[in-house]
Image (cartoon, rainbow, N blue to C red; front, side, top):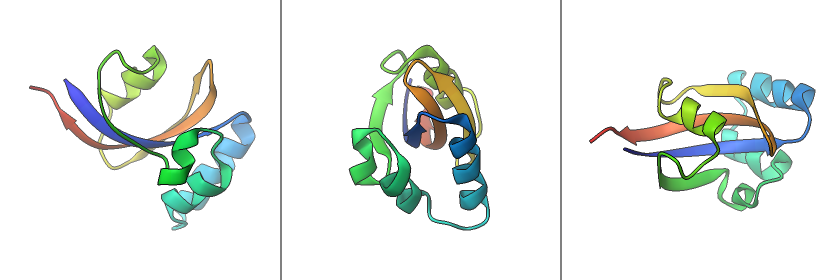
Length: 93
């Protein structure tokens, strides 16, 4: 099982909620990732590429491999902080 996703990682849950509201009101996800994310993926608009189940922390995997595609999920708390996650594609084979 593999998937591709993009995310925005911040250390503050309130900021994470504010970013999500901005995206839901039409602000570009990639632009918000570039501006706010503390993950190196911010230089790619939050794009993480293709990865397999088990390559990310459990809370992240649980979202990516069970929830709906093309929707911004979160805030999702992990040991790294608070994530907004958009699942781009998933292959269950």
